[in-house]
Image (cartoon, rainbow, N blue to C red):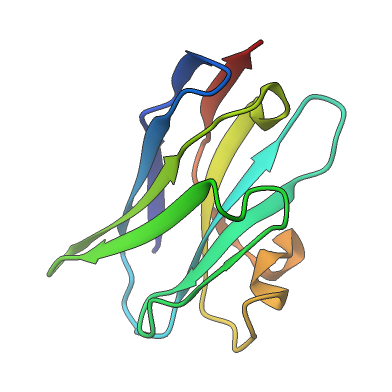
Length: 129
């Protein structure tokens, strides 16, 4: 069973940086997509960046491209997904979730929350102006 645990959220002023991570265990097969989503109160869950665990290629949402960078560190039993967030804006304030999917899809499809069954519990990011 896939288990995802996020950490590293916090509060920062606009223009600042944060790095959040997601520890992933139970990936019994290769070919997973690991993706960061975020959700603000009253809004739907938005795909931020999807990364294929084999190719390491990432697809970014327009709202974060050039400011956020995703990376993956694969260990023997544990995989860690990172999200480096620079030049943060108040509109980046949200709960950030990581998710895993084995479905065959492209990077754009991988940004859609309906393609994911395994989710972490989320970590809060607050950006003040």
